[in-house]
Amino acid sequence: MGVFAKAGELPSNWFIFKTARYAKRETDSGRTGVHYDFVEEALISRCRAITLKGGWCKNEAVPDQKVCKTHARAANLELKPDA
Ligand SMILES: [Zn+2]
Image (cartoon, rainbow, N blue to C red; front, top):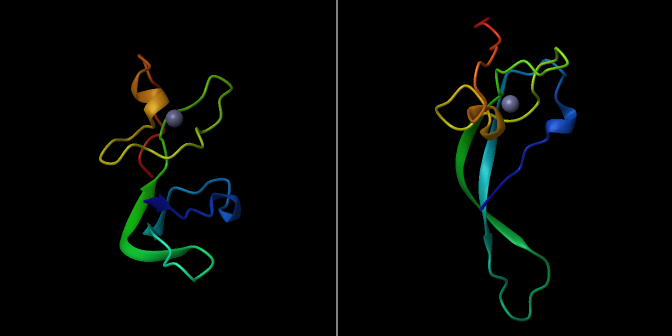
């Protein structure tokens, strides 16, 4: 299972984007290449924490949470307010 996220093509102030999850399929013998089967659409939210440098964290938030794994463990978080 992987997420095909084209984060490099997103604007620096991206907030949420839709992507699709695919499951890697075992290749049949005699066929070459890797095949992926579509699984589901997924909404990726951005971590809402403000970094020590004052920038907006670029990580993806944990599903159903406002921050990424790194910031979920940090205390006294400064979060970007809802737009
Ligand atoms: Zn973060």
